[in-house]
Image (cartoon, rainbow, N blue to C red; front, side):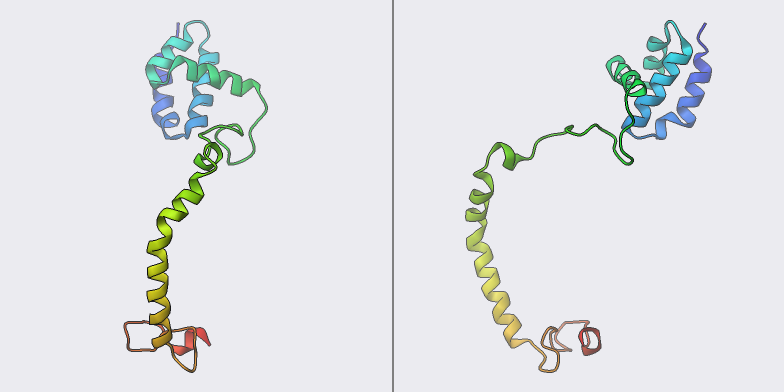
Length: 136
C-alpha cells in the first residue's frame, strides 16, 4: 500500500518549491520508492503529468546536467533570426529613420551642454546630478 499522506507531506514541504528539473526528479524518486501504482499516486498528488514523471525517471538514470542547467542543451525555442536571416536587417531598416533623428538631436544637445573642464559630463545645474569630481 502507498502512503499518500507521506508523499503529500514531502511534496508540500520540499517538492513544490523546486525548479522544473527538481520537481521531475523528486516525483520520479517518489514513484520508485512507492513501487507498483506509485506513478498514478504521485501524478495525482503533485499535479505533474505522467510523461513528465517518466522523463524524470530517465533523468535519474542519465548523466547529470552541468551545474545551473535545468534542461539539456538544445532545449527551448530557436532564435527568430536563425529561422529568418532577413529579420534583423528588416528591423534595422524599420527603426533606422527614427534613431537617426534622435541621434542628431542628442549630438546637438551634447555639443551645447558640455563642460569645458570635463567634456564627458553635462554642465552642472542643467538637470544633471553629476559633478566634475565623478568624471575626472
